[in-house]
Length: 300
Image 1 (cartoon, helix red, strand yellow):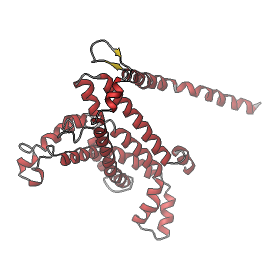
Image 2 (spheres, helix red, strand yellow):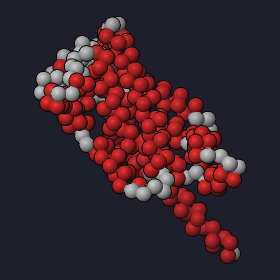
Image 3 (cartoon, one colour):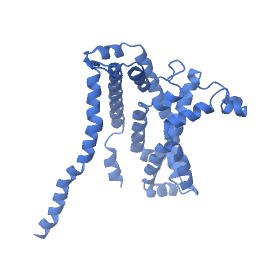
Image 4 (cartoon, helix red, strand yellow):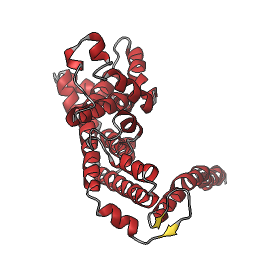
């Protein structure tokens, strides 16, 4: 009788758990699923954003898929994604590992590194655009030759500036993720490595990096999926220029929908962005192997 009495509240609490997820589910359906279905439906229509909506079948999809600008925008998007991931990941791992240690002023450094993430992307773009102006920017004011070139007027330099600013803004966030991952690694592993005579570099490559495998997958997923939505920073900084050197897919969607009043093709591009993001997220999850959460619980 006593054991039955003990287990009844446990079963009741388990039965109540699904209801706790209902508010989050309602918000997700209302702000994610329903708008996505609406955008998918708009991709089969002709609409200028103001007047009546007219069904047009696959006209918008045909116009988007046959546009030679789509492969270019998609290529620039993947290039920004790849290069920014290659820059952010090593820096984030190193900073996260540093901040997870017991160095003096670690908390102060953590706050300083986190400042760029608290700034608006549009404000950052405006500030860098003014600083890099070849006539009135930092290079002209301080007469520093390195900062004097027209950074935003040359395709290669403009692309490099975009990647630099994106990395500068989001490395703190991913460093915070890696800091938490490093702090979850059992100290006994490092103690055993020290007893075997392993130095800090050997410990980093033999213990820290392997133990951060699932953290790397999580951080990479956020980087990759987030890079598909880069818009405000690029729009304010370069507007996709010079030429189309920094015209990513999200910016292409905006220009079609709100500047050319072609909501049908813009909606089709939005659906393509969602599909690309889902495919990339699933691929990264496959690379991570079994469930990361279960592995962390097992390690704990």
